Amino acid sequence: MITQNRIIIIGDIHGCILEFNELLDQLGITDTDHVFCIGDLIDRGPDSVSVVKRCVELSKQCQFRLILGNHEEKFLRYLNHIEKKTGLENQMKGTEEFPLLLENLVSADIELIKNAYYSFSLKQENITLLHGGISTNVKFPFPETYRYELHSPKMFKGLDLVTKVRYLNPEGKFVSLNEETEKDSYWADVYDGSFGHIYFGHQPFMQETPEEFGHATGLDTGCVFGGWLSAVVLENGESKFISVKAKQQYSEKR
Image (cartoon, rainbow, N blue to C red; front, side, top):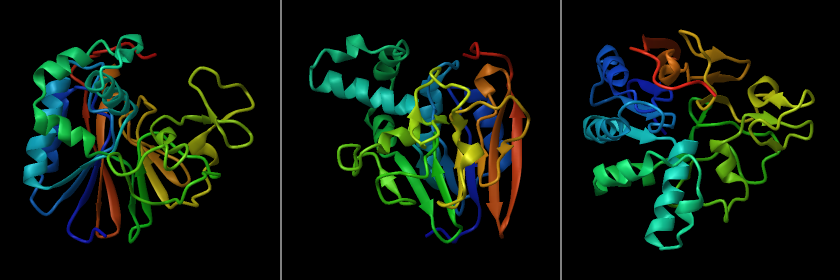
């Protein structure tokens, strides 16, 4: 249960350290704040290493938690293959930045990522935090708080999909990226609020303020693609958005 002061939830950063620092300055973080990053600290942007290290600094300044993004999830799979010497890391796609991360992150930085949460339930506020999305027909208890190092998709089938979900088929099942059809729906469009109000990232909405659905709010406003870096501040039963404009476009939107 979180009852103290502000709850601050920050959208996908993707290595945009200048915008991240500017946003933190505007937020004026104090030691009574509870700060969540909604995932995807790394990849695509100019300085993922500095973003991770800034989050480690932040964790010493306030109550900080990282929600596991699909890019962190992939990085941890990559790291696991290296540690177990499987050689499978060489077959993974989209890992171009990972050697640089491994070269420059120290153990405390890696631990911050390993300590991330698949989902975080703020029961008193009736809020759930996750990176991607969720179906209403999940096969594990939800809403709950699931932590990467304590809970696994082997224990809770489909848990890892909360980092990846965008589209669902008419039966509510996950549809892989770029395989969606006209019959499929974006998950937040059909989400009925069963798990409280969900704050999420993953899907870039190229606009100055987060995208609001009936029972969910998308916090990724496309900073790495030249958009904005956004946060929501929850305090005394009210919410407000704070956004900073990207200094430039760092990556092509896919």
